[in-house]
Amino acid sequence: MPETHTIYIIGIAKSQQNNPITQQYGRFLLGFVVNRNTGVIETCGSTVVMKSTYDFLDDLFRGRNIETDGELIRSELENRYFGASQKAIMVAFKDAQRRFRLFKQGIRGEALTCQDELRSN
Image (tube, one colour):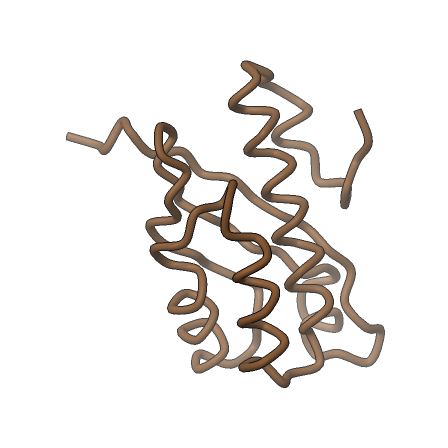
């Protein structure tokens, strides 16, 4: 039976034009499986080119709280991740945080599923 306490939230950002992520995917996306009640990130996926980056980001985000650990995650990124997509990762995470807040407010539909980076509401 599927886990009903989790939801899937995405965050979207633009990456640098010369970045292989932009060339392959067009945008940078982070996908989070989050406990809907606690905000704890259970797993993270991303549109990256190298598996080691994918694994590193999953390890960095897993177990963190999407609502309350933003500053900790920002610090971890600045001190541990030295790839070209550092800024895009943070922007995508902030977008996912925004979408999670909307979910917690009871908002559903296009506001949560749109593919526009940091769409204003």
